[in-house]
Image: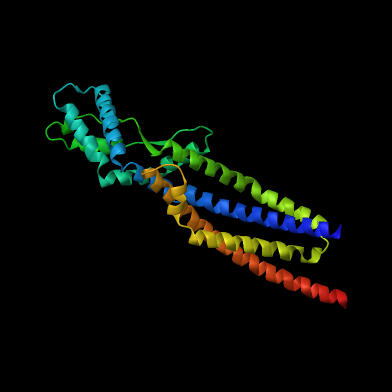
Length: 287
């Protein structure tokens, strides 16, 4: 019975510490992805591909022509469609268009996070507004530029992740959310159970702190040595999808490594203090 209680207590310590360390790691990963620049960076990367730009030019040209018609401009005039297509192409291929993604940080981030939190499937698509850039270019057209109306161009959809990559990221995102919400509480519950079955309660919390420190140090070591490219090669998707996965892994792993390094250091210090106090308490009891 005594050996069983010892084993049960050790198991509770190990699992509880693992859950708490995982909770801390998930918090760090989600914070890096939600509050860092990786979402905007992946969106900017997605719109630089030839396929994405061709799609944006086609959709943008149609949207601008429709907006001009709604504003009362005759788009049947010969050459208007070609000029409009050239303007959209100039906007989409300019460095300012990449900057545009970062100026719409809140909108892009919200759209991507909502897509990852959704239970649905399919690619992750964000909508970008570039009415100001189009109006500025229209105003620069010789002779007729000043007479063109200011238009509101409907937001254009940009695919940030293909379907395979999006589904993989959604699954990972889902488990990170579960870990963030429940693993901390589950770890504390296991530690509480471990206290109840432990025979040597004086050393219990020192052992918990040691377990957290060791597990956190292992996670830190793995994150430091982890190559994002190796992870990307194991996940579905190709081309820009690989680059997106690399960006996500790189951003998350740095944050996790920093957090777990501090957790390991702090837990080890706490463990040393608790072991010292427990040892002194034991000596006092003998006296």
